[in-house]
Length: 114
Length: 114
Image (tube, rainbow over all chains, first blue to last red):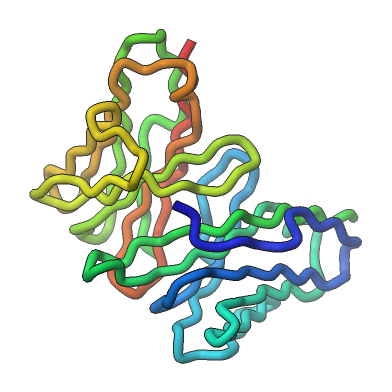
C-alpha cells in the first residue's frame, strides 16, 4: 500500500536554484523521513522529522512537517548537479501495534542542470 | 551509519526457477526487516515485514507462497521468489531499522526472469 503522494512528480532546475518537493500522507504518523535514490540504486536516508517537530535542518536540506494538513516539504538549497536523483518521503506509523513499517510516497524525480 | 548488505545485486533466471535474495544487517541486530519491490520509475511498495523467529507479515495482495521470507537470525533475512515468471522481474530492496529511527537499505537486487 502507498501512504502518500508527492508533487511535483518531476522537477527540473538549474544549478544554484532551490528545489522544493511536497509530500502528503493519509494517516497518523510517528515520524516522516526523506530518502534519496540514484537511478537503479538503494536508498539513502536524508532526514527524519518526528510528529512533534515542525521543522528540521541538515546542511542544505530543510524539512517542514504540518501534521494538521498531513503534509511535509523538503527544500534543497543551492542545488548541485549531483543532487539529481529521485526523492521519496516515507511515513512510519503504528498499525495495530505492529512494528513501525515505512510506507513510501510516489516520489519526485529531480534533475539539476549544470 | 549502519550498513545493510543485499546479495546478489542482480540476477537473471529462467522462468519457473526460484531465486533467493539475502539481506544482512552488518553492524546491528535487526529483529525486523522489510522487503520492498520497485518497478521502473515507480515508488517502493512494501511487500512484507520479516520478523526474526516468526512468520513474516505480508501486505495485502502479496502472495506468501510466491515470495517466501525467512528470518532465521538477527542479522539475516532471505526472500525467495518461487517459480519465477517474467512479471516477477523487478527491483527488490530490503531494509532494517530500529523502531522510530531511520531505516537502512540494502543496495537492491535487480531480478530479470527470462
